[in-house]
Length: 555
Ligand SMILES: [Fe+2]
Image (tube, rainbow, N blue to C red; front, side, top):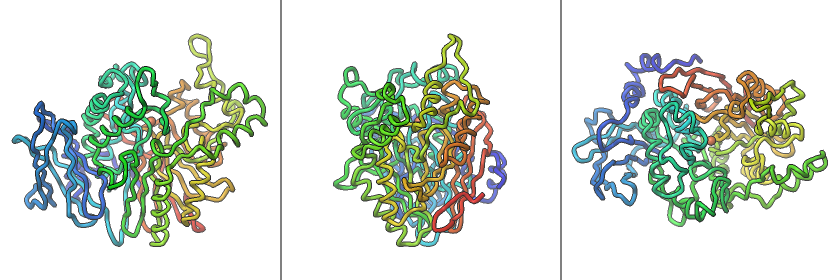
């Protein structure tokens, strides 16, 4: 398939289709005084969907009218109502609009104090026979590192029905921390300037992220299916704390986490928890008629045990025997969970129902890489780390070589750092009859096409990983020059059994298209995030086929 660029797509689809006349309008950033943060929709079911906006006002509360119609001109208003933007919710407005028909595409807008918001387009989940589904997989949108051009591209991608954001929707860092230099150079300095800790801080940061033009275009164009990863609260959290949380200076972790989750619920188009559930228990099951079930997984705040820090083990990891013991007893410690029991019960039920219904696709929205990734000895492939200006080899490069020489997992914050939990997860899926998982993953800032296997080498499905919307790839970020960073991608694909292909050089998204018979993963990159003027490019297209009761890359 030839990927059209944005202008070609608009020309081709603009005249005839429903998608495209709209995409042009969605590209326009919100103007006016009140609705500066655009509109959004998400968390759909068969008959309703969450509509979202935010009002900028000094008043304690302001009435907001919402309207929903089948046509963009709002000639026939299907549903409408009144909501209240109140300071207690940071003047965000969330409406559950319904009843609607299944698979219905509708347009919506908000009106307050004589001003009308931009128009959003959204749709409910389809019911019955579904012939195709298009999902944009995104993660790691870091305002400081660049413009959200991938979002802009998704806004006008005619193949997309829903956007799946697997987390790192925003980053908690202060203006002079990670990404700060780039931010200063391109005028995207984090607000507030300090690391966000309080409710007010998290709200301010959410507001800044929703001021991006690409973000406004994408959220207005498509419904969002969201899960969070770590940076929506703080880097590498677990149930008892986080790597980037210092209780001595930043207070109680539970209070910070609660503030971050409250701001997230205010600023994202998601439903409040069902009765008996807590806000932290943020997982969903989306059923797309007879075609697919998608389960979004919460892997940060409800079940996760503490991450292993290699620093604590450097001195004892000196022999293959010591490494073996470490992998078995520390990385493989069965007491370190990833998912809560309640999350697992939801997952099991959804997979069982999908298998029983004979759906061809079982999709998981997954925050962190799942494939087994022991680092290869890159020096054996001729990769030599160059010293920096001070004549020293940067720590990140040393770490890659050290892990490679010992065959240690690339990351310890991912499923690879929780080997026993991953086996339990695979066993649960196997018991539910699902060994053909399509795992859609974020977090790593690289594109991935991986094959998954359980500990006994049995196929469990495929993992499609997306690069950051703007966050830079690991090898580039570690200071490897571009050709070595590209070579490291090749070495990973060649040497790591589960990795078929990877790319850490680009930012972008994965277009996932499914039909009852087959699937396609298209890895779409943008040529720059440093200006809003970009060009999309297709890096790779991976056809996916059903094979021997499972799924595999077709080529
Ligand atoms: Fe990230």
